[in-house]
Length: 200
Image (cartoon, rainbow, N blue to C red; front, side, top):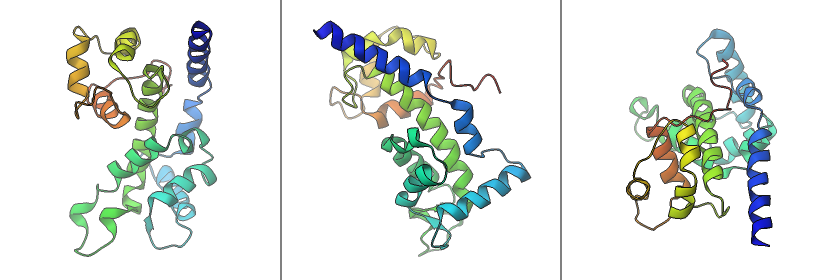
């Protein structure tokens, strides 16, 4: 019975990865620094910002991923949106005047970065989902050890799994949370082998 559950879990992870249209995701989020892509971003920003105040809240970004971009895969991965929002919203802080709303929201000049971070964190979310075989949004040492082959295929060979696990588990809770995994994966430059990046 537990074997059947494990098999279903493996099939779920494999089918989830296989169904992601990476080129489609990139096409919906104009990230390049070209005039054409900038124009697309400006048009999208206006649609993300229905009240026209020039700032995007987390709720507006969340809603925009679903209603404007139609990126349901990302909309369903709330930690991805949260991390991308947190990473992008501070990019323009040095230029903000004292008392402005800028540090708490996404401004138009940070919108491209939001797309970059959404793409990066969504890729890391797929890795995290692959490692998290228990599907409880955290990774224990056994799950981490079982995923060493996958992690190596993403570009990192780990010799001492326990030491690496402890290094990732910043709060020492005995479980790796997504935020901890994401910081580590981005720092180590892990790369999914089938995310379409090499093809471009």
